[in-house]
Structures are given as C-alpha cells and as structure tokens.
Length: 268
Image 1: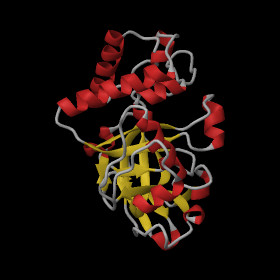
Image 2: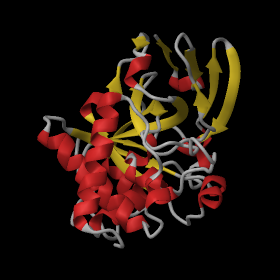
Image 3: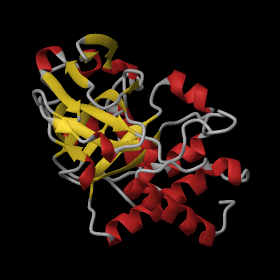
C-alpha cells in the first residue's frame, strides 16, 4: 500500500458520511496520485468496519468488472468486489426512494444464494455450483459516492476509486423465479431491460467470464488471501451482463429473464 493507515481511515470515513448524506466526493486518485489497488481495498475494508460499528450487517458480496471490455477500459486484468450491506436490499415490484442515491444506474445480473461455505484457495467452478442453493434474477443499483467524472476536468475515475467506493454498489433487487444450478445452462440465461416501456439493453449471462459462476470462483480464491471466505446464506451478485442504464425519479424498470420471470420496480 502507498497510503498511510491514518489517511486510509480518513478516506473511509469520508465515504461512510457521503453514503449517509447522499453527496459525491472528488476522486481520491486525483488527490492522491500514488494510490494503488491495495489502497482501494484497504479503504473499502475500513469503510465496512464503520458500517458494522453503526449496526449494519454484511449480507453478501458483489463482483464487478467481469466483462473483458470493462476490464480493458478500466486498465485492470481482473474483476473487483465489494460487500452487500443489509440496507442495500430492496423488494421487487414497488417504489424505491430515489433520494437514497446520488446518481443511480441499473445493471442486469444473476444472484447466487449459497447453501454452504466456500473457502479458498483452490475453489473451482464445480465447488461453486455444488455450494449454490439457488440462482435468481437480480438488478444491481450502482452509484457514485466518488464522482464518476470529475466536476471540473470531466476525467473519469480510476479503478482505485471504484474499488474504494464499494465497487459502486448501492442496491440490489432480487425477484423472478429462483432456480437450481442444474435446471438451466446458466450461460444461456438472457434478459431484456426495459426503462419506461422502452427496451434499453439485452444480454446473456455468458458475458460474465464465459459463465456467471466464474466470478464467484475468482472471489472465493481472492478473499482467501485475507483469511476470509463466502458463507452459507450469503448473496453473491455475479456481475453484470448489460451496460449501466441511468435513472431519474419516476423511471420504471422491467427486466424480463424469460423462463426465470421478471424483476420490476420504480424510482420514486
């Protein structure tokens, strides 16, 4: 790590307060050009500690940057990850308060609900499939506590910023029809995303590392370096297979997963 522990704790506190107050911060990488990937994760872990001290719980994890195109654009050669806090889970079919967010966008994903623990290193695709109790349609709501584009220069944030910022995660809506992993070829699960009745995005789950469970393989082995693992009952968002779609108050979203049903909600 390049940043001092005291600075990491200060930046984590800024993010914690930004999420509470719904205010964007300037990109950390602009203020601290020496920032590294390790610093991003250190800030993220310090932020999680603040959330836990405030009474929140970790309900699972999200995996991002799973597509080759996103990795190239972010100048990174692997995915990233962040926790799912308990207040990030929203019910489908209703209104979600837009004032919970700063600049929300939505992505189409599959969520894996684990039936047993996964502890790396050495976790394989078959281990993940054996440990998964259900796979269900999901929509991730992403946000920017650290500005996506600098307010003055319009320079995009760096991957270090995104990692520190909970990998942009702000919410998850699960719905549709949960299925067992052996009931479908998960690579061929597709979805159509409609915003206000107009189709915006389509995609196949194979766009996530050729198989949506491969991100979870990567995560389980990545967490092992910190002595951590994935726990039974946790939700793991496997990664988006559509581009982010921006949202404003009044926008309604309807995502059709074919045989896996529909997830829908409205920003109010």
